[in-house]
Amino acid sequence: MSGHGTPTPMISRPCGPLQGEAHVPGDKSISHRSLILGAMCVGETHITGLLEGEDVLDTAKAMQAFGATVTDHGGGKWTVSGVGVGGFAEPDQVIDCGNSGTGVRLIMGAMATSPITVTFTGDASLNGRPMGRVTDPLALFGTQTVGRQGGRLPMTLVGAADPVPVRYTVPVPSAQVKSAVLLAGLNAPGQTVVVEKEATRDHTERMLQGFGATLTVADTDEGRVITLDGQPELAPQTIVVPRDPSSAAFPVCAAIIVPGSDVLVPNIGLNPTRAGLFTTLQEMGADLTFENVREEGGEPVADLRAKYSPDLKGIAVPPARAASMIDEYPVLSVVASFAAGVTDMQGVKELRVKESDRIDAMAKGLRAAGVTVDEGTDWWRVTGLGHGNVPGGVTVASALDHRIAMAFMVMGMATQDPMRVDDGGPIATSFPIFERLMGDLGAQLVRETA
Ligand code: S3P
Image (cartoon, rainbow, N blue to C red; front, side):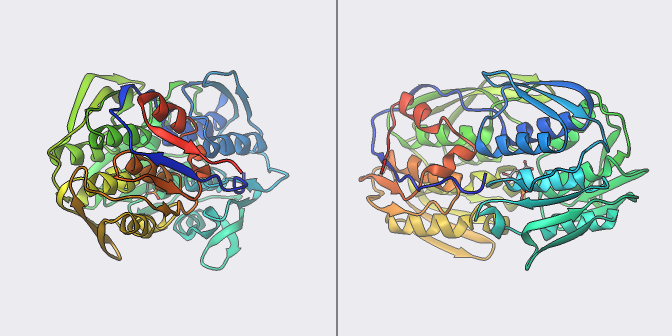
């Protein structure tokens, strides 16, 4: 879906204690991959707990356009009847991935080694994001690309008719790039090897193994070396999607900064390549407990309890942790505003090429709300004012970015005066039940209508 129509401003007012259970939606990364891998095997994949946000729904539509049958059975239950590795049909329409970098980059990889021509587009945010990071390695398989200047969408890919396997060292810490190369490697003969210097989320590796591909991972001096045997016959799976730790971050951080709060977030995926925020919050003095730790569907899962944390302090977040919490820096910067002292975030230049330039978007809004923020190309620093001392009382831009909008809505729950975002529409891309869920806990969120 390109764009989401008329902007809908949202207000978050300071509120009383947040209390209760927060059943956040399914994991976005795993949801995209469930649909794509389901489409790449012959037979029916059953998915429970799929995230029904706009990003994932766009991927579901795309898989239909490639010839898979995707059926919504209601209540988060979906089936995908796939066409097999190398079985994608050529879509007769442009593939519109809306706001989703994950959607477009993974689908580009999945189609890149099939002899079909596909044109991709997205909304204003996605059409401004760099695609060269994916099309460069895909070219090594023999895929051709024509796009706008700077490697931007809209863009047409001509899949390789005779793909060759690839060995590729990912130059930026990006699970999307790694995954695009692995998905392309599925339909190339021989072994495709991806090397990543910094470990990024490993859902693609885990899920490929789950779907029956032969994939090995070795930690070497060169980095994490992932080797995939090409042209496997993938077997359909039954997938229970864990709840998204990146969505859990919002009620968790809200509970930490709103006095008197006690919130339980059940069934959270705690894959170590995703859980960096929770370690960071604990180092800052947050009251978090992991209950009922277990493994489900190959992913570690727990129930996470977050309580108001009166003694929050700023810390230096280790750069080595960045990849495991890359989507959580916006809401972390909100928590940092309520901490005592400085929170220093280094090695985060990837934040500048997300749905928005997230350092810029957060710095502008935090400064407007009375918080001091310093920034450089790949770092930023928030000087906390302590609980009760953050003024707020301003309207800030959400920059077509769901996580920016939600971060400022969390902030307004504990500022002295309400926070308003110019557009809450993007929240529907990843967390369509955000307002209701936060409202049920006690938040005071209001969406303005025209
Ligand atoms: C994702 C990877 C990350 C993350 C995004 C989801 C994925 O992006 O920010 O929200 O599912 O692979 P990068 O690959 O750009 O780091």
